[in-house]
Length: 90
Image 1 (cartoon, one colour):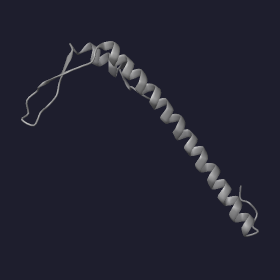
Image 2: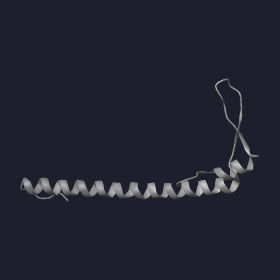
Image 3: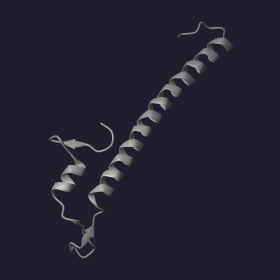
Image 4: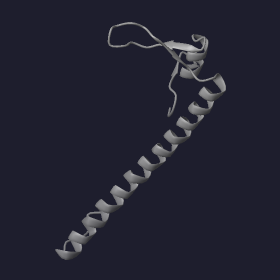
């Protein structure tokens, strides 16, 4: 699954929304827990949707890259076979 992973049927956004009240803890150098503001839930949903969209694009580009590499390998093999007068192994 691309984008936000799911745990026990809940998305990460759902888990954050369930367990947040507008702030989230974060550690500082002294080991204290200052509070960090979270964006509104609508903005969190927009961010998650954009991340999912971009992850889908990354997946598509990785697939294209793999296909391009396979094509390049086949082309190189055919070129070497042609130049050495060997039958093409593909």
